[in-house]
Image (cartoon, rainbow, N blue to C red; front, top):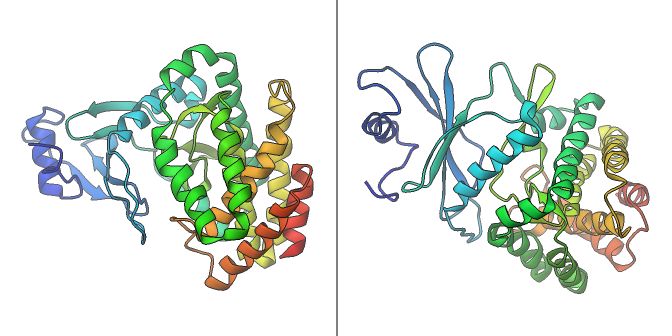
Length: 339
C-alpha cells in the first residue's frame, strides 16, 4: 500500500492498516472518528479498549483552503520530531509520541484526556482567563529559552526551513504582499530580516486553535512548522490571534488588549536576558503587523473575520506599517484605538 492509497479518514482503510501493521490486534475492537477543523492534515481519533486513545495525523499534499496551497507531506515527520523535542522542554504541555510511518507520511500521539476544550473556541465565546494567557506566554518563553541555550544542537537538528517557507513565508507574507501593494516593501524587508535570524527553536504555529485546555492546563498541538530561526515570529503569530479577536469582538476588546499586553509582559520577562542584540521587540512588532495582515488577506484568512472586518484590519495594519510603533505596548494601543 503506497502513501497515496491510504486515506486515514476512511475508517475501513485505517482499520485494515492498523491490523496489518500490528498496531492493534487482529480482532481488537476500536472506535475510529475523523477530527475536523485542520487544513493541512487528515486527523483521526482512534480509541482502543480501556482508556488508551491515539490521534493519528497524515499530511495532505494540497491544503484545505480556498486558494491553491501545496506543501510536501513529509513535513509530518518534522512534526513528529518536534513533538519528541518539545517533550524534553515542556513535557506537561504535549502528548506522548506513539509511532511514525515514513511510507504513509503519518504519525500517532496519545490523545489529550477528556474532558478538554479548544482554547480558540473559549476565546471566541468571550472567555478570557488570565491564567491561560500567562501559561501560553510562559510555555513559549520556555521553548525559546531552551532554543537559545541549546542552539548548536538544535540548529543542526532543525536547520531545514523549507516547511516554514512553504507554510508561512509564502502563504502568509508573500501572498499578502501581492494582495496589498502598500505593504509590499514592509513585507519584503520583514522576510529578509526574519530569514537572516537563526537564534532559537521556533514553533511556527503558536496559536489558540492549537491549544486544548484540560484540567486548567494548556496542551500544545501541531508542530509541523518547527525549525531553528527567528523566535519573534512566534510572538507576532500568537499576538495576532488575540488582537484579531479584539477586532472581531468589540464588547470584549479591552479584555483582549489586556490579554495581549499580559502575554507580551510575561514572555518578555522570561526571555529578557536572551535577546542579546536588543532587536527582539522591534522584530516582534513587525511580525505582529505582518501576521495581522496575513490573517486578513493571506491564503488562510481567519474564518471568523467578516469581509468588512478584514478590510478594516488591512487598512489599520497597512497604515501602521508606514511608521511602525516603537514597542509592543504602543502597537497594541495603536491597533486597538484605530479600530
